[in-house]
Length: 198
Image 1: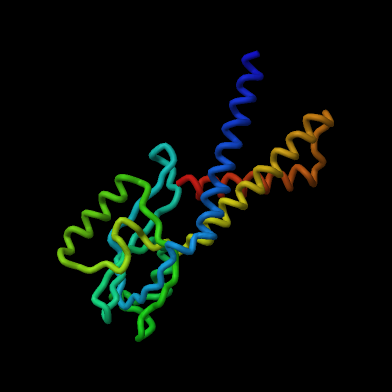
Image 2: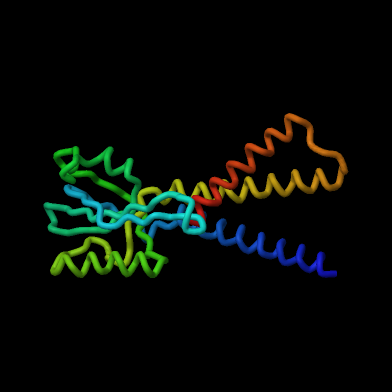
């Protein structure tokens, strides 16, 4: 009885997680209300968040930048990779393109309270600065990629479940080729899971 209850709870939890990933992934891709186009002439990193597993194993970083539009005397907060920054700005923070960098991306509210608090502290230190987008929101450069990763995670999860059901019903193990394919899928699933949840 206890084993069946555990299975039911695991299935319900799986459906909940899959539903959340599906909803957030699709809603980000279809959201046009919160899409903004801004021009960035200067950009500087204002916050770096390091993610770890159990406080020991490094699991990536998030980088937050302050972008400035010199023509409109306005600023915005941007979440992007270090690679994006190096590709578009020089060591002084000036855009590589003399006309500035135009970006059209999704603005998302910062869900992590501590990160939001740190960013608002940065905003408050700036004094009287106009923001083209509400500073409670950040422009997510990689929002499409992250949404697709969520949907890919769901697809991989379904494949893993199908393989597990087939193995349990057949009573025989996987062939050498299928074992290798399954191992690759599991590794890719684990990497995607860490990227999505951290």
